[in-house]
Image (tube, rainbow, N blue to C red):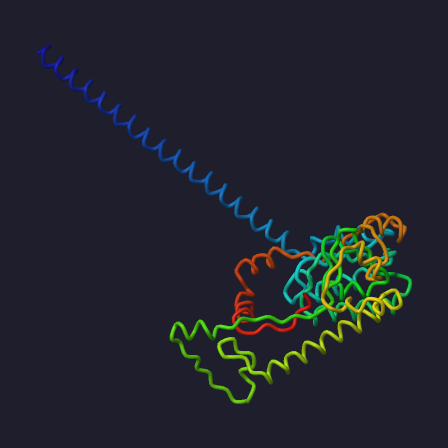
Length: 331
């Protein structure tokens, strides 16, 4: 009888031990599940915070209020600085819209004592350059007390000099490149290449000269002469604007080659009357305008503008110009 009790006790003990193990395993499984849920929540909170930070950063980047602090600093007396950098063309940093907008802001600011156009450009569109030239003259008429000074750094050629000639005075470094008062229009001819490849050009037009300057057809003498007239008229407009801006300071009678498209160093340009002195933008602000505090009014590209440019928003336009037709350019 005692043996049976011992056997029963042994079975009960084994059963209790098995139950304890089961509960421990169940407890571990539940704890592991809870820990996994906690980890998931933590990562979820982290990624949500990261998303919010990204969105707030993007809003701050694109917000029109991001320039308020810069605008607030313009109230004191200062010299306004506007950069004319790179190719002068539509949809570029040195487009007429950007430069004219900056000029208007600078002229309208009560603290502006003088305006410096810091130029480093090979030129570009005669239309864009003409817009800027005319606007400088108009704004000077409305604000006779605020003078405009052009300061050429590395390069102020062609359309860039067109703009500079509208300023009251032009300064440059002794080694700067100045001038190139001329007009160019360039394309390519693929006629010989097409013949070698056995490719025929098939174009259908309504209008005798609609395929004007087609690079895939031999040039026509009458169309070439006509196009030369267009370039000559544009060149004359350029020359007239420079003469109007520079006046008697320009020594064009003694040096008719000034309008041949040649380019000179700053030291030579001073002797030819293309510029008024040698100096930098800080020199002009400090010694000429007498206001060494400089405030930059240059229109800055937004992140969205840079993004669209990287996507190649102007690729089609540029390819059309390269492969087919390119209008007059001051460069």
